[in-house]
Amino acid sequence: MGPQLVETDSRSRVVLPGHANMRFIVRENDDGSILLEPARVVSEAQFEYDNSPELQALLARAASAPKSSTRRRRA
Image 1 (cartoon, one colour):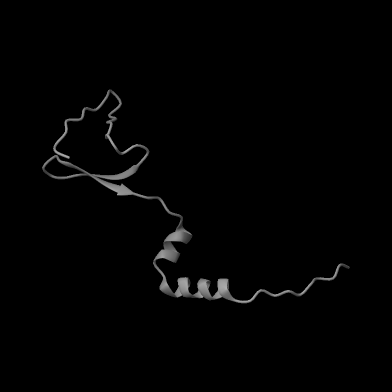
Image 2 (spheres, one colour; image 1 turned 45 degrees about the horizontal axis):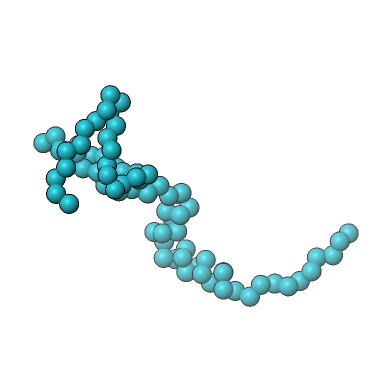
């Protein structure tokens, strides 16, 4: 796709054809150009999991461990 002209509205909004319902990190460069980087929002727990091979291995072992089948007695 070649260059396209887009125009902001009175509320500083712009339509990006082909990019509906997306989030972006916006950076304005010294030369005035604007960089839009596609972004995703993740929880702290997901971020920790994604960045910790040890945690991934621990949770994988826990998920594959045999389940206990002991019954609880009612009092």
